[in-house]
Amino acid sequence: MNSASRPVRDVTGMNLKLSSCTLAVHDLDEALGFYLDVLGFEVRDDVESEGMRRVSVGPPPQPDVQILLESPGMDPGVPPADRQAIEGLMAKGLLGRLVFVTDDCDAAFAHIEAAGAEVMQEPIDQPDGVRDCAFLDPSGNMLRFTRPRQAALTHTARDRRAP
Image (cartoon, rainbow, N blue to C red; front, side, top):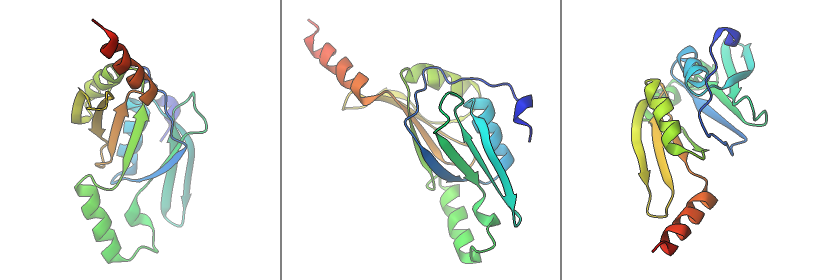
C-alpha cells in the first residue's frame, strides 16, 4: 500500500501523548486506510516476515508516537484456541483502546464522524470537567479523544468563578 498516494488530513487540534501501542486488527489494509485517511497518520515502518505483516503508523508532527497494527491470527505461534479468543474479543470491541488528547474535542469529532467512522460516544462533558468522545476503528478498537486534563481543570475553575 502506497501512503504517498493517500491524501493526508490532519485531525484538528490533536496533541497526542502516546509513545507506542500495538493494536490487533481484522484487516490490516482496512485498518491502515482508517489510520492514514481518517486520522492523517503516516506509515513509519511496514515489515513482512514469515507470512506476518506489521505496520507502524503515527501522526506526522510526532515521530516518537508509534502505533503497531497487526493481525493476531497471522502469527504461526498462536494456537487456534487463542486465535478464536482474540477474534471474540475483537468482535466485541474489547481488545484495544487508545486515548488521544486534543485541544478541540468537538472539531476532532466532526472531522472523524464526517469521514464515516463508527461513533461510540458523541462529545460530552464528564463529571470531572473533561470533554471527550469515542469512535471504533474498523476492527473494533476504541479510540477516545479527550481534552487535556489541565485545560479541563482550568475551564472548570473559570466556570466556578463566573457570576
